[in-house]
Length: 630
Image (cartoon, rainbow, N blue to C red; front, side):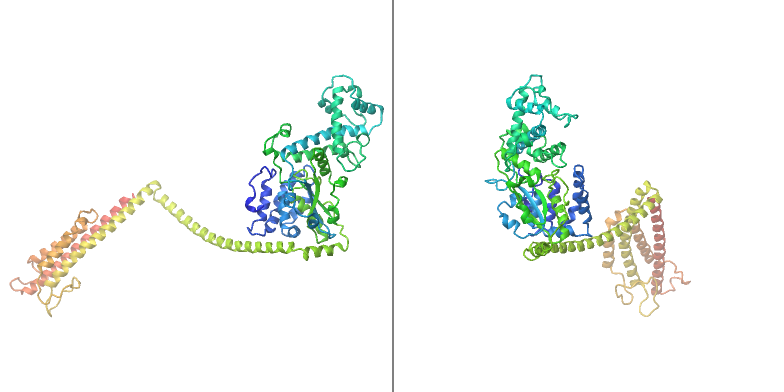
């Protein structure tokens, strides 16, 4: 299944698909290349520990959690083991589709003939058109019901088989002959209550035969027949319920009834998790809906380790059910009694090449495949319990098989190397971005400092009043700027008038010239030039064209002042006042000297008027700024 087809949530064919499995597959394909890399998946392993703590409530998971958490960068054993797993097998293991994805593969090619230590995965294969698929919802519901019946009646039959007294024989006789005494116990629920009572033990014995009714005997007989039907599916003959008890409820060594009971309950709970939440088993057993008859491509598996994988996988045959996982054996017999033909099939997942690899490899693969019965598999205890007992001579062949005869390790190493190079490029890019972020942070700090200064200034200027006065002050400055520009235009025209006056009535030829005002003449008058009427008209027209400025309140005063200066100059030119630098009468002074005197007087008058006007404008500007600030 390509990465693009990974479902977002559980589907009909993949009912136990969760966020953690999705995250692991996405991490395995993090590079987006055709060859996935195990490096990102290895970095994700510590996130699996919280789920293992949840399983710890049922069975100890200390060594598994320790092995997963300790491989945090100082020890790369788990990464090395991931390199040794074929990429298609690793992905199928995570998705729990090993049997579906490898259904067409020849077992001899999968396991090989080399005697080498390694890890294997076992699942149920169904011949025919299923093509590696597991059960449907209807089949799972029927299997759960049959396992529950086997547990209840199998325990009762096993207890009867362990006794050889008259009461026990009487019970068997009543069950077989359907004989009983009517005492009011007429349903199976009361019988189960009697069997499962807290005070019930081997000493108290089975229920007294006088408490059994004919109807109850019929139910007991039917239930025990179901137990025998399941047990007779076992390939080993010679097993009888009367003498041996139920095959999968027998107590050997340290087994107890509670342990056998928990074995059945664990298997029922694991299968029930593959059904919709809150499903009614009785209704689902007879459902004709198409969705309830879709077979799942996800199949539970059992993870095991062995010093000789090729030899160990041969044990998983129909004739060796006593030597394999008890959950697989019980489920096989129940499914055979239903008319199905499951067959345990083991496949090699990893061949180890170092002596210390076997235990952590089993822990790793069991964790990735969620193979515990408390999760989605058949394993009942924590992985890694079997240490390495590699024989001398097997490891060299295993190393040769892993490093020379197979290219799995080389391909996975190359993919990891490419991923690390990609991560290095991303790290360099991230470093550059961090440097730019540092610069931005410095700029932001400077801006924050300026904003703080502005806030303090606003507080100093009066808080809310400052927010009103500052815009007014800015508007006043803008108006002053406009007025100054208008005044410059008008004063330029006035200066041109003054220049014209000096050119026409200044000192001619080689006489002493009046140094003020120091204005460079625009026209070469050449002697006693006269005012050109056209020039006067042009200047007058230019000033009159400033109507927009004249009507503007900001620049009107400056324009009026300029015209006043010009009027003063014209008045000085037309008048014949007594020159302040001469004590003689006008008749005794030559006409050129009189013109020069009038010109000097007009220039001084213009300068005085200009100075007075500038002082007046400065005072007005200061007053406007003060008023705006208030």
